Image (cartoon, rainbow, N blue to C red; front, side, top):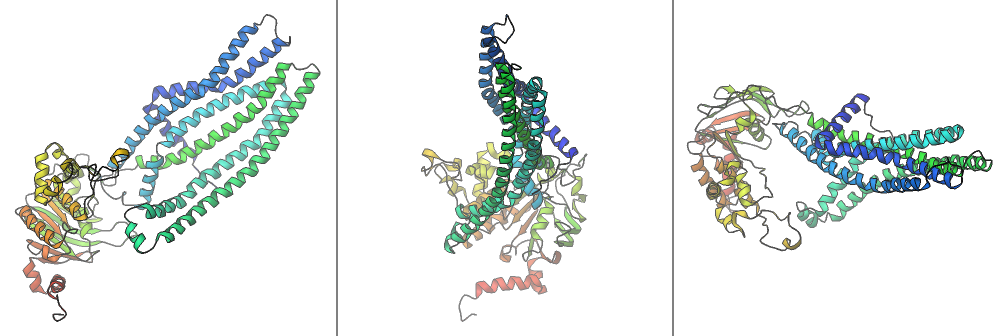
Length: 614
């Protein structure tokens, strides 16, 4: 198994960025942690050296006049430092990790906010990278810094112990060093294989999580039980888990064989050194202190070398993790934003689409094919058509979530690409078919339509009344302050029926509509299937309210239920990405085209209410 390769230039760029993040987040903690790593690296060498001096003084082989008391005090202090330093480093490191996590999260979200459209967010490859960046982005800087400091500690310990061995016996020192080279080479290969395995397992992990969510999540619970899918999905989940464990098991066996051989090699080298040292001490060439420091230096060298290799492998993995985050934060805006944007004026004349062509990528078919359309100011334009005709795509273009590949969209004659997208959207109000139910209070769920209304409860309630949901929200346990979710509660709140409430689909639909009413004074109001989740009586009530809301305003109404759009000033029928028909309801019926056919089919479904009629 071969691992992913980072080019030296790319690795250096990631390292600079990751270390820079650490420094900006916690400069003081970074300096302290580096100093502690240096002290932790030299402490074992000092312990061994002081132990040798104490033994030499006790056996009479040391220098005359050396105070045994001072050596003992020094040894005790250094040993105490060796015990305290790891705990102190752990605390400092945790503080640094928390600071880095906050900074990384903020920078990641700022990068996502720079994506003013949906081009990248709806791209599966970018979405995978973004998810990985959210999950592991903070690990890159923290692991890189921590392991880099750990490598400094290992290098100091390795250098100190290796120097001791070379001073005692150049032959033994070189033997230990040469024996360590296979360890270094093999450990690096194993680290690369481990990094490759982590990336390879992402496929298994995603599918394992997918099946696990199907089994325990609410959205699929009804079908899983009704269709008896539990065992089927459970077996599929276990298959993914077996595949993941098989990959891990193969690498574990490979590591076991390698580590066993390296352990035997290290033991042989250490044993040969022990024989040599004891023989030399018996012959008077080495002191008892020399024997003790040698016995400490051999495992010290091997341990420091093993730790260094592990740190280098961890640095490599940290750079791989940081790659996802770095690519996201470096991503350019997905839509061009003019440096000197024109102000967006109030809509006076209308919005015009001129020869608009659009597809989601060169690999996808055209969704819109030369659409010419005018939305006059102060009038309601209805957009109808079969699924896939391009209605939702046209809405995305009007909101400038995407730009046309060909053609232009003009706001009173000005290309919308000359405006700042945020300023353009301030002129828009919308209710989307796939609205978002937020795990917030009822008041906040409405106020997200216009954040300025958070401190204006009267506006929120007025919008709720217009949407026909005020009575429902007022009757909640805590009124508009009731959380519309149960996911945040635990402990004593878990069984409190007043802690949070889950609304029905139709009630949520009206809450989303209230957001639209909150923005009813905007220049263009987009209503995308506003009654899709309502029953017949509620739908009739809602469209009565919407007629009053739309009167005298520029609005775009999208619906599959043609009876809901018949009173629009103009009805536009899309077919195969083109404008097939356009005109008032009566004219389109008289023309006998596709709109008339669909309207007649729907009307016949309501009239034919008995077998005799059929």
